[in-house]
Image (tube, rainbow, N blue to C red):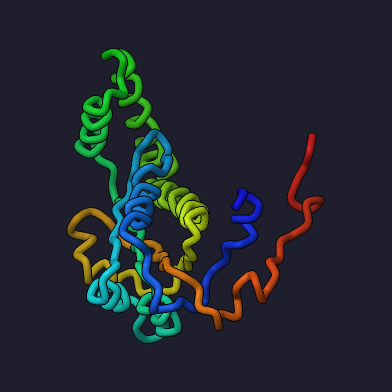
Length: 219
């Protein structure tokens, strides 16, 4: 599929076929999609819980109790589920860890560039922490950048996906001890293959988007 075909093929899957599973080789690519996502100043303020076992999916499904039970089948019947987690702080120790990792990976041609990159990371983190006072929100934005690329990326592999905010994130934080590790769950994305009976598939329900003249200003 070319890009336009992929964009029209993908949709938010409402019903997964529980008999179909993602291959190990495709799961390796799924993890690379998550890991290689861009982020502002390469902050990478995320952690991912990847559940592709029945036990793992049942643990994620603890976030679908009560009011959110309508999303339980989308978790249990999917081939795998990814819990997207955001950092709750970006302190100096973490920034130094990033800098050391980049240096190890050969990102810095010289010490001057290393200091400049570290200064940029520190400056923007401090702007959001002290001036704009939206550090957590800023880091969550970076995670949502990852989610957007992830949805398109898995579609390019012929894998369906369902992004969900309709879960009890506090329950997931508690289940996986996320807050103690400096993270919090913000979104869950189930991946797998659409069921033939899914009413929302693009074969049955055409996509709807606002027309170009409403969303583009061409100058």
